Image (cartoon, rainbow, N blue to C red):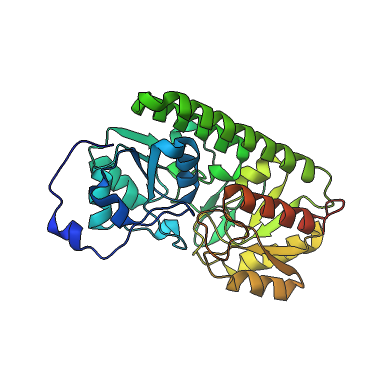
Length: 327
């Protein structure tokens, strides 16, 4: 759709990084040469936002993700070719302060429509990390590391269906304004998506209401909003940075918590190493299972899209927390 044409630098043409979508309906970089198509061209920063853009844009939008399937989004460094594609897009959808290289590229670009998902809902601090790797948990037990998110705030808003729905509504309105010819379609698609998210919220609320335990252990402190929404307590081995190393004191503390709170399971995720989770589980006599922060979909994901993986997360939480009828 973008009618602005520029000469693309040689470096951009020779860059080896291929652009792929983080969702199954993705198109390759070769399909988006120059970022100009007959559709509303949207560049997204990583999977949760790609899923929103595709769901809301439908057949009228051409969506490309900057983060490849299986790539840890926190590690993303944008290539010259991706920067050129961003310049040629009609809109960019990103989450400020999650991926610094994306923030820099967006700030320097002339994209007409810049949508910051973090501005479409409320972000909170779910704790900070004090000195070294000692974590200081807040009242909900959310130990987090500073340095990610806005002023240390938790960026994982998509794991709370209610906040994710708020973001969806904001994205829908932005699409309507940027591409008014298809505003009715975007409005209809947004309403359908929000309805599905409302249903997911209902299933989580019902499914986690009467669990034997309310505490769960996970490697990556990504589930603060989810825990807060459904009356649970997240105890994380690492902070917001999934690659950070916990202190021996933190591991010991979590072992004690597991005993006192009746914890059965240590959760890990698919995009980072499970070594620390398995060590803690072995030392404490606990099981391990996957709780997916949904930062990307791969062949190892328990589902092909956001809703399928979230349903898998609900099933895993119900089993770990001892919900009635869980298997």
